[in-house]
Length: 245
Image (cartoon, rainbow, N blue to C red; front, side, top):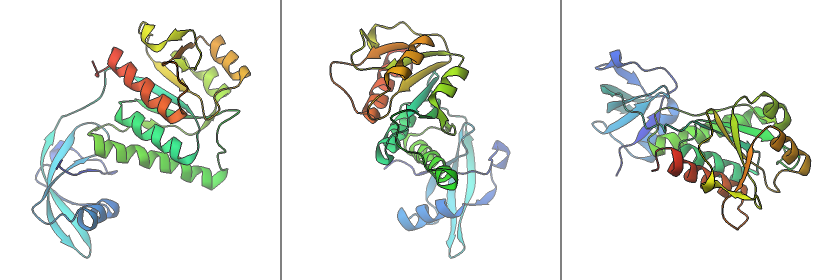
């Protein structure tokens, strides 16, 4: 069984080796109530800024749990390929899946996009909770896959606004495109991978994307679901230009 990993929002530092710190409530609950860890068990902490910390659980009681920091390991598992996933907002489960798999596949950042056919985004506080939920999905994926740097999930933005501000190169996944993803040469950084929501982009959006210079590509002869397209395209990109080779 892999050693349990937990994200901690409070900053850690190599100088804390030997110190004892409290686990935050959610991590303490998961470690002691879900995983049934006990004093003496080893686990790993990371704070999203790079590197990880080997720790030992030293106290479990009604107040929570505490760990002793045993050592700092300057380990990063980041891809040399920096990719922003610009994802049309999909229905809840599909969006969670796309974000989770993109994180596992090494995406650098995630930009949710409001498009003509995207799933509705609740206004106000409910929309803020949706963004917080997506960021939680990313953290959970980092805990699972071993990443020590947490990809940023930016607040949702209208696609036309985001497209106008984007200063890098881009690839748009479009079933029926003349070129396949595997035929491309590596675009200059920064690179965005643009994936439409369920139903894809409409004609005006595709025209704006093309005018921005994004390269339209297909990935095989089948029409993929939006969450499948994001994962499949990122896997191919990592195999071509990243750490999947």
